[in-house]
Image 1: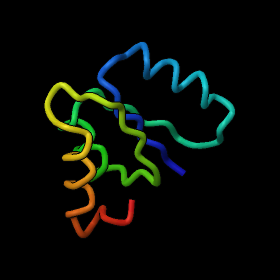
Image 2: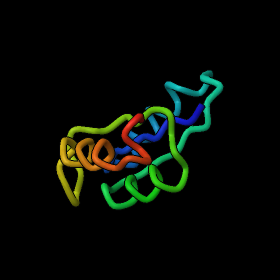
Image 3: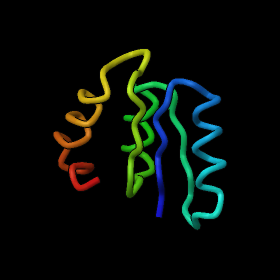
Image 4: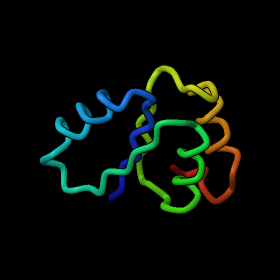
Length: 75
């Protein structure tokens, strides 16, 4: 299983990683919507955890873009 954490604040990403340290999943990280979309396309995470704000877009837009792509819509 792969989990992608999309959070602009590196300290918050660290807190998520610490909280999830016992989960036997591969943890991926992205700080921007562009990076998140690249990782979703390349790595196909099973779950995407998105923060409330992104420096280059809206979290709802990110969800819509993931769901509109036939290759990633099941994430």
